[in-house]
Image 1 (tube, rainbow, N blue to C red):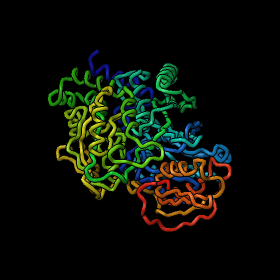
Image 2: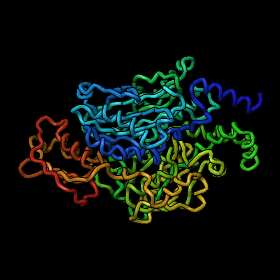
Image 3: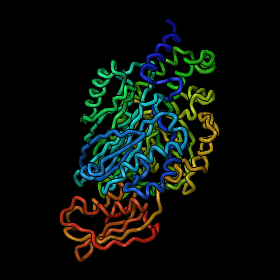
Image 4: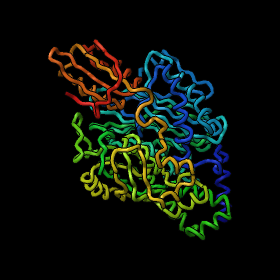
Length: 568
């Protein structure tokens, strides 16, 4: 059996599992289109959101909530008719909801269509008296009708010290030349969920609630290997599974962070540099592998322009092994450059911000530029293989051939911190830390890239978004209008850790302001940000404190005078 015949057998095997390899992207590319579908859909839902008792957390790689530990409960809802008992939701009183949506590809083709289904989910979650915080959403497409669901993982945080960082990432297939229960493929999927925690420096007390599915003959072996691998990295959390018979691999993972998270976007300033932990663009290997094995003419072209197919397969295996390695050492290095709890940010000692360079590829730098209100210039775009990525773009195999899975981590810091980080990171497995760009100063959120870097992006719409066009669709900072709240908290609220908790909750919700002890025993809390988040924050100020009550609250227009949340 020759190579093409073997590949046809793999296509047949995956088709029996409901996956049409020819029409499905791989790895993180299986996500619903972020910039052309998901973000515009969220914008269409803004008015719906205001009517519901829920709030969307700031756009981050992971959900970040105050607490020292957490417990998880998982539920599955029908995509066509999502329902959730309001009484059950009030009884659970979760700190955050993490959502995984798997929808048929036809329902995620346009923003208005996708928004219709997401609106149903939001109505189900926002119908109780408990205000639900939507901390992290992950949406993927399926090529099999009926293999659809909304999965909601409710996390309830406990304790008052530090933060819980949580994330879900789920994929369907990375390398179709691997078996369904391939240890490498499983490792990539689970590590991809962990990577967003590692990006924020969270690596202590890891908990993993796997997400997995496969046709019945394969489900047992896959389940055993997923659980075994998850248990090797942290504490396994048992949770229900989709049971659709459609291949699925991933996890909801959460970990404890006992330092301040790298969310200091307002501190990013002129002269800061951009560090990546290693080259990216991993998915170009796997999408190109499928494409050239589907088209003999394309395979011949690949061998003429790029490399012999035997060499390509060997390199693909090497890239898969890199992706299957958890970025734990990078997390530990990032952790060393985070402020202690309650400590102020010091540009000469701390990292300002971090982001996972996976699904969006080069566009993550644009996201940070918008979020920080700065212009960033990249002078390098280090890829796993510039030749393979160029071929993938030239032949319209991928709209963005810089995308990856369990990929590099981008770090924004002063030159002094960056130099120390590069030295530390160079000792981590598979790491090749490099300074690839610089912050030019305050601006419109532009990302300036070398002209030659555009050869890796075949989509004209995506190219345009590298300039002044917004990729976050207005989600960079807030969803609704910004307001100011001044709250006076009474009772036993001084000397009991109230102000540090107030600060942690504000940081988790992306709010700015201060908490100050008053001579009469009260605490004055001033906070600014998105209206829904501010109101949620004020409602929960006394949560976890027995003799505590919120007295007078004054709401007004935001003044925009804060760059952080301080303890005074």
